[in-house]
Image (cartoon, rainbow, N blue to C red; front, side, top):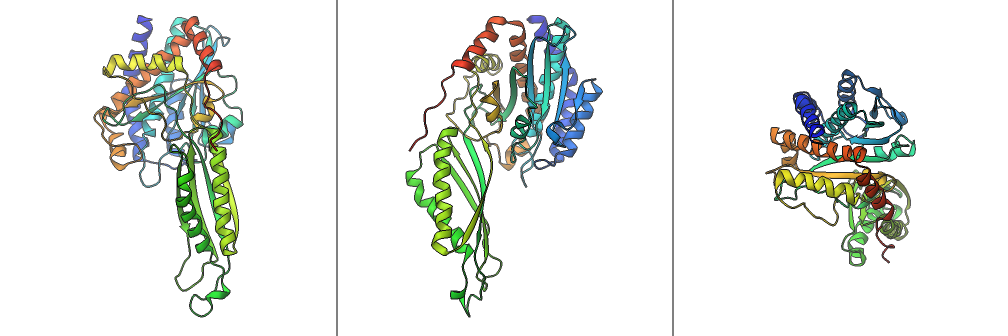
Length: 403
């Protein structure tokens, strides 16, 4: 393994300048979900320059891609894939570090393929460019279109705050999340001359928001509900005939999310019933909770600890990802790596600034080395791979929904 590790380090170090340029270009050109045309073009062009086979629009998604490598020893071994993300947040840009996720996926991919080529180990390695993680659920759309079919394992990386704000982890259990929009339809009227002739859609939205607050007493401590009124009226002298609420809610498991969803639908119906409005609910994709593989996660943490010399960060839950849906169907690793010295959490302006620093770049590339080494061990250590398979089959899924 020593020579293979040296190869991984060498390949990533040799590509570091190119990867840094890609990361900074993505960072300075933030693009929202399903609009990541600049990042898509950068990444696919770079991978094509390295002679990988590219599909530029799997599942019909214009900003998704796959890069494929088949071992010279043949494709009949393991099929292992990495995921890159590259969408940004509204106004905050790359405050979730997807520029680093993009290049860490590329680095893991090119390093592993170089070792597989060197060792002549049979198998296939893929890099999946997965758009729209922050909304829409690009991985879910790709999964439904069977883009990941045939893969034995999927791995990806995500930056977190420095050791003051967390650190590294190979066992991040994310929350399951559901987003929805609720539209209320009433009847407009003059607010002073004849308010009794109107049906106030804005009031329906307010009742729903207040009901969310009242019902928090009955919500489990791990549940989260966050809602805003996007449209509550246009002028204070007109009874609003239209209002819109955008809501996201999270639970520890998909089963618990079903229970919470029922509560939320009753709340939004109550707003309509109380005011005499009609309403329409549009439900978006459900992001399932992420369940990492104990074996892959422990090895990832072992390698990270060699570098950082501190214990892995442990958190019961927090945040959500569409990678969680993949983790229910594939052996997987969603490795967290630290941006050392950064005391700000993701989805904040200081974190966005931190993700373009040279220090963040170095942290991402070390995590990519670790990621590639974890994947390589699956290829070359049959006992390790068998243990990972056993862990996936026997993993303890969380219990039934809370009532």
